[in-house]
Length: 248
Ligand SMILES: C[S@@+](CC[C@H](N)C(=O)[O-])C[C@H]1O[C@@H](n2cnc3c(N)ncnc32)[C@H](O)[C@@H]1O
Image 1: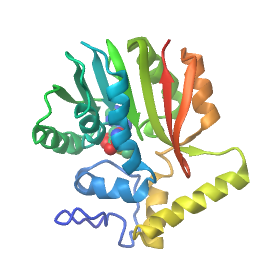
Image 2: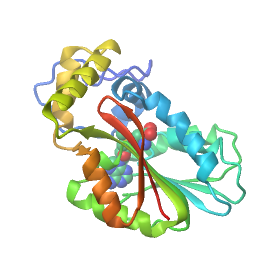
Image 3: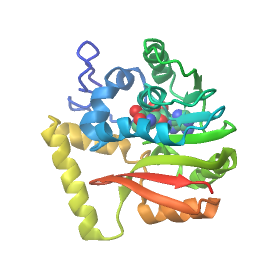
């Protein structure tokens, strides 16, 4: 895989690769991740600061705020900078050592007072406790579909009353025409951001088996099954959506 660590520009799939393997969040990806996610995920630049607005609204005194699949800590930082309640602690978790190593230095460089604990762990193995906010930003889509409900059950159990779960994920559509339209516009977004047809095709192949999107209806029904009565779609840009589920 090609890489461009000096500029931070994502060139991971720029060269023809005859031996494409499944996408992994390794060192090559971690070094270009901010550029990669901005140029690949429509709405990412809007969602991140808005997570700070959610944090301001829903963080409760003396509670935990979780960032599951934190990568380099973008969501953690956005929330950390806007939390005004006392006694809050952010717990940021990722199972990629490369991501966690860089996340640590990003968090250390930030001066905000809210304590952050960064863990290199599988989000399927951790216990959520005393949570006012759980963020899972573009990460549920990487969890095996058959394990997603169990993860959401654990999150629901660890959320306090009035706690919120914020999911952002790629989505698919039951309506074929709508699905094709959203995929076409997502592809156009990547072209507009400088990705070549080769890069787009190779990354699509690498992600095929590991990024499995749900429909909005699947998300809603699963969230209802685990106990969330209020589920709001708060963001959509092409085939990416933000969901806020509130425990009441
Ligand atoms: C698309 S990135 C998330 C982006 C990040 N939340 C943000 O907003 O910038 C997905 C992240 O989830 C992590 N991940 C995937 N499966 C995981 C698991 N089972 N446990 C912990 N982290 C996981 C990956 O290592 C990767 O860093």
